[in-house]
Image (cartoon, rainbow, N blue to C red; front, top):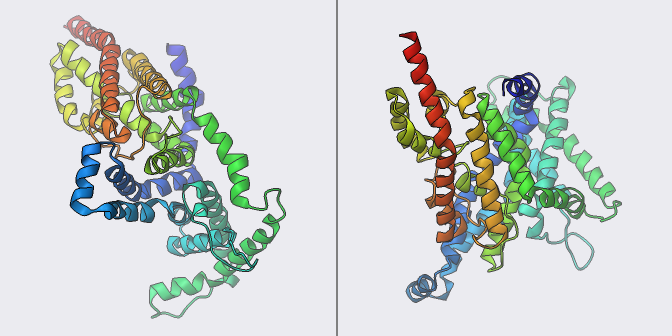
Length: 427
């Protein structure tokens, strides 16, 4: 055990720390986080429209008429139909800010660059309409790539003094920033316009189709497996054990893959079809990370059952409130879990068992797949039922919570006894 911990602390943790602070991954993570209010509102609108209860559907029609779904449909349209546009702006904004450059200008240029690459459909062969399929979740990978490339070019050009127009003092800051970005932004758009002409020569003749075929489809196929879920959970738990915020560190890596998958499930649910993907961030939040990473709500319950020492029971009492909303810092650092060899095994093993059970149950059709994005602070069991639009989701989450508690029980008892023995030895 000690040799494993030394190995992880010497080799794994420094690498993970550097990944967690890498500016592009941080910008991607923060860009996705900024979209959460929109995504949550849109997914709840889908749930309201498609709640699978016949009596509810009939009641809504009788009260509001056949067009009652337009209300939720409009929210879905504003939230999800153009989600890639929001992402292109959000990632660029955060990346530019990390360089100390005007994020608003960078975000607008990223948005314009993205639109330059969007194919236009016209029966006459000229300029025409664009399909919303190039703006929704299916275009997220393109939006991500465009945001990073356009911002990197913009930042470097912005640092060339001869390209920046400096306005005299007294000019409003907003005006001064827009003129300062004029030539760097213009050059970025010219570069992307040339790129759009070259892209027409690639095999698909369409960057969006090409990226989805070569990048997105293989990644989602690999991600939607039980082993990928186990790896994500394992890495998250190990990082947390060493005091690093595991979810934030790997968020920039997994968000671009997992978010389009839950989006595809929401679209299928909206259309009355069977959702495709099992492994989503919502699934991890509602079925695995109950009480927070490590399923520490189970640890709190185990402390109430097994702990005889006053300090352990007090920490459990202080942690139960935040834990019901998946905030686990009080127990993580108070018990503590960090660097505590007594809790390493259940802290890592419990969530892995839970994710295996959850993915298997969903793939076998015993429990519906996640189709609603709920906030990660939603209380356990309730959040699982809402995210799957089914009481079966809540039942499975309750079973997982019992499993987490059972896994923690013997280790919590051992920790409590060890503390008692050390205390008596000092006397």
